[in-house]
Image 1: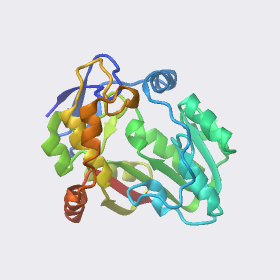
Image 2 (image 1 turned 30 degrees about the vertical axis):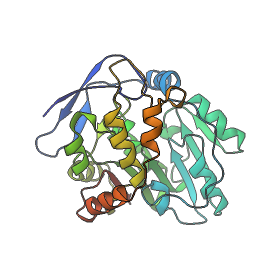
Image 3 (image 1 turned 90 degrees about the horizontal axis):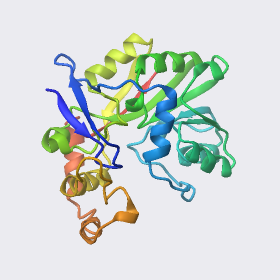
Image 4 (image 1 turned 45 degrees about the vertical axis):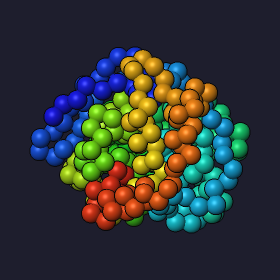
Amino acid sequence: MNRALYDDRFGHPGHFTLYACARCAHRWLDIQPDPAEIEALYAAYYPRREPGPPLAHVSPSSAAAGVPRDVTVLDIGCGAGDALAYHQARGCTVRGVEADAQAVAAARRRGLEVDHGVFDPARYEAASFDVVTLDQVVEHFSDPAAAFAGIRRVLRAGGSLFLATPNAASVIAWIAADRWIHWHAPYHVQLFSRASLAQLAERTGFRIARLRTVTDPEWLSYQWIHALTRPRVGQRSSLWAPELRRWDVRALRMLRFAGVEKLVTRLCDRFDAGDNFVAEMR
């Protein structure tokens, strides 16, 4: 079933058609932005933020959670470098790639080596990383197969690709319908199912070592607030733009973590039907 979606977070104008594969349940948007368009999209609409305090630990729902100590890491779509700084503190040699110039500047201010732009494997020596991470990033790729082929090139023999990405076949996505928080048009171009992730791995020379759903309860809290406060097309959301936050959104946020979110997400994950895939590929 195809859907008509719009940017219900940051106010990018217009509607986008989300197509669905009847065989594997993969979803994709009807857009093919080039690298320059991607950089402009994030620079113009994504909110700015400075790096937070150093992370003592990372969420089990993130791609960073599986990364061992003392390895060489490339984090694609590293943002302001929170995960990179975490890995560096654990003895890793780290490097990042980020399309948002302002996020790159923030990461560099904390002393991290981060390349500006979209991932280009030609920028790196072959077989130069033990680990590559994609934390909520693969869904932004217009051509995931090309990106995975490039990742295969820069990984050393025996290296691992860790990724986290929304599960378009989740129970929560089915219930929320057009108001599912992770449709996130036009930023999420590809939305995966278990079957389409397996197909992507096979096509690009990877095998899936682990694949499960691990859903952060905080995101379920965001989900129901997002659904209740969804703006009209072309308008920024008061949930995602703190300077616009209304009294009712502030009140709803105070109700987070009442216990229900954790129960629901753990139940969904128990049946492998949660909102967020976490995978290791080799």
